Amino acid sequence: MAYELYYWDGIQGRGEFVRLALEEAGADYIDVSRGPASEGQGMRAMFAVMESKLKAHIPLAPPFLKDGDLVISHVANILMYLGPKLGLAPEDQGHRHVVNGLQLTITDLVAEVHDTHHPIATSKYYEEQKEEAKARAAEFLDNRMPKFLGYFERVLEQNPKGPIHIFGNRLTYVDLSLFQVFEGLRYAFPRATAHLSDEYPHLAALRETVAKRPNIARYLASERRIPFNEDDIFRHYPELDRSAA
Amino acid sequence: MAYELYYWDGIQGRGEFVRLALEEAGADYIDVSRGPASEGQGMRAMFAVMESKLKAHIPLAPPFLKDGDLVISHVANILMYLGPKLGLAPEDQGHRHVVNGLQLTITDLVAEVHDTHHPIATSKYYEEQKEEAKARAAEFLDNRMPKFLGYFERVLEQNPKGPIHIFGNRLTYVDLSLFQVFEGLRYAFPRATAHLSDEYPHLAALRETVAKRPNIARYLASERRIPFNEDDIFRHYPELDRSAA
Image (tube, rainbow over all chains, first blue to last red; front, side):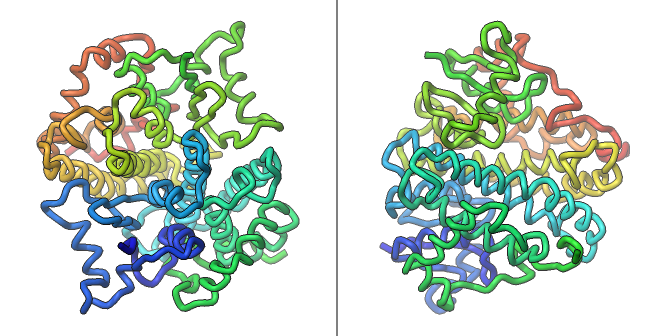
C-alpha cells in the first residue's frame, strides 16, 4: 500500500525532507494535499485527520505520514520510521538514534530559519514584524547559521568513514536533508551564502553528491518539486539578507 | 553501567525531561555536569565531549546521554531510546513512533516558551530584547499556549483507553513531560495560568497523577530537583505575564 504524506499544498516546507527520502528510494507514495478532491484527496483530507473528534493521537500539525492505520507526525520521526524501510538508515539500532539526533539538529535549524521572517507571531504577516525580522535575521546570519553549518561540516570531517556522508559510508536520509538545507539557505540568503562552498567544502560536496543521484535529479527536474517561494520556510526577502558589500 | 546525562548545571532546562524519566524508573544515572571535577565530572567533562576534535557524531548541544560508547542527543531522541529500557514506552514499534510524535510536539512548545524571553537573539540578554519579548509572550499566551494545551487535552480526551494517560493505559515518558510543562507554565506565567486546571481538566489530573508517583514525589522533594529560576527556559518575568485583571 502506498505511503500517504500529508502536508500543506504549494510549498516545499517541512514536507520536503520527507519527499526527498521517498523520491530517493523510489517509494510508492501519495502527496495527499496535492491530489484531487474527487478522489478523497486535497487539503480537506488533511484537515479531516487533524480535526477528527474521534481518532486517537491525531497530529497537531503537518507533515504527517499515514502507513495503513498508523499516523506518524514530525519530520524527524517520520524519517526515523521510514529510514530502515527505505534503506536510508544504518542497521544498528543505536546508530539509528545517532542519525535521528543529527536530523533533530536540522529540525532546530529549520525552525530558526522560519523565525527569521516570523520572530514575533506566526499568526501575523511578515510585514507586521519586519523590523524584528531584520534583527533576528542578522543574528541568524552572524551567529546561528555559522554555528549550525560549522557543526555539520565538523561532523563530516570527523566521520571515521570519511566526509562523503554524514553517517557511515552510505547515504542516509540526513544527507538528503542537508542537501535541502544547503539549497534553501542559498535561495533565502544569496548574498550571505555567496561563499558557502568555500567555507563548508564537505557540505558543498555532499550537496553535489545528492543532487547527482539519479532519482533525486529526476525529482528535482519534475513538476513534483515545488519551486521555493515566499509562502515557504526558506523565503527570499532581500532586506533580510546581508547588505551588498 | 550507569547512564550519563550531560546538561548545563544550575537549571532544569531540557535536561529535566530526561531526569524525570530516569527518576521515575529508579534508573542508575550520573548527572555529569553537577558532579565533582575531581572525579572527571563537572561542566568540563560535558565540553570535552562537545568540543572533541576526534570523536564521531559529537552533539551540537546538551542534553545528551552517554550509554557506554553511544552518545545520543536531543530530548525526544534520548527519551525514545530510554523509553523501552525504562518501561516507559509502548511495546509496539509503531506506537513508539506515535509517542515520539507527541514528545516532539512538546519539544516545539518548549522552544516557543524559550523564545518568549529570547525572541531575537539567544546570544543577547533578555534586557536587550524586552520589548520584542513582550510582543512574543503576548502572542504565546493568546494563541500558542492555548493551541498546544488544547491539543494535548484533546488527545487525552480522545485516548481510546481513557484520559488518564496520554497514550494507552500506562504511564509513558510523555506523561512525565506534560507534568513538567504544566509546572513550568504555571511558574512562568502565574496570572495567565491561574485557571489552567479548569480549562484543561484532563491535563490537570495527569499532573496530579504524576506528582503523586512515589519516585517522582521523592525526586521533587530532593536536592536533585533544581528550583525553577531565571536562567532557565521557564522564567518568571512578571512583565511578560498577562496583566492583572
